[in-house]
Length: 517
Image (cartoon, rainbow, N blue to C red; front, side):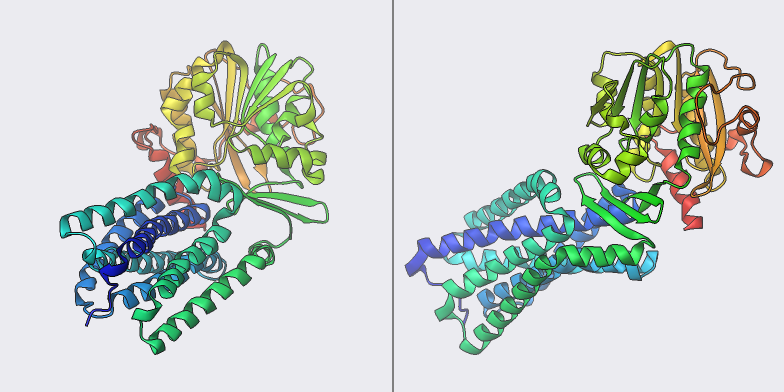
């Protein structure tokens, strides 16, 4: 006989089941967002990660719904068991991904990710049919399905709002998965408590024991989250981790060994204090040396203050606007003593204005024009970043550049990713700039690294001089920076330019760097 609740307590029973439906929908979507985000942090290409997650999740839900037709007895008991198991797998999903990334290969990590999505999707697919059949005692079928699905979708809506605005900023992915695992298991506890008299004692004890064990385990993991994350970071990085921050946009990690300070974003190194001056001098002083005027300078990215440090060496500069999407980057660069010492407190200079905003949004909204624009954005590892190397973006940059202004962008490595490098050069040409000047410099931490400078007037790259103090650049090496060896040149006829609609740069970049990883 089906041990579903009786109609005599219809109001309270309905309330318990309605809460269960709502929380179930909330937790399931949170798990998928957490898995997609974590995979994107580690592997990049967020569009691909989210697409795979959504597709497999929906298919797995269909499998779960199909399997539910073989559940005939003790539906309430089975629902509670599903919630406890779902809470356990969902709650442990992000910690598993963290350790899979540290201990397994690229393909194994993807396998673990798919397995987690399948398990969560199948269990979620079981939830709705079970709840609908349990609630048939309170509503006719038409109302029953409408109520269950609408509540489930409402929970999903709340999840999508909570995730970017509360969970990521306040808890991060690791703690969020544990918290929602506990919340998911709380549904099981709630139903175990309220419907206790309808459940067999032996089965009820097993479920209580399982729920209590998993909840205790998750609470312990929350308590030791900092030490666990520190241990994980120590596995990935050779040097001691001195700063870790998970923001709504990225993971920020600082490591230090003697005099070598390094910044990592989502596991990718951004600079080493041992040789970062080679990169930043090449990025900054070459365009500033040829710009007819340089009163107003715009820096895209560069929230760590190292570009600003170099720009401030030019006394003609009157204002520097730094646009970085992540306010935590500015916070770290000002308040962390190691970073602020390295950037020589450049962000505290009265000439510097900091704007925490997406570069595309800033450029669309600002009415200002700039004499020099320096793009120090991360490599195009994802769709979000590759759009900042698109023809559309460079056209927008051109509009915000003074007619006698100069643009420069970092452009990944011409040795490790030649197609991606020359694609950036071709994209800038396609955006309408009359002259582009690709050049490169050797930075030991990164290897051969590329830049592209552009202007609407000719630049004499073999004549200009650097008139500020430098550690790397000199008059003798400047002409060599604009010369490329035969093995990094690519036939321009084989390279397409990149647009928002067709981001071929992302394809070039991922394919080429994958060979080296």
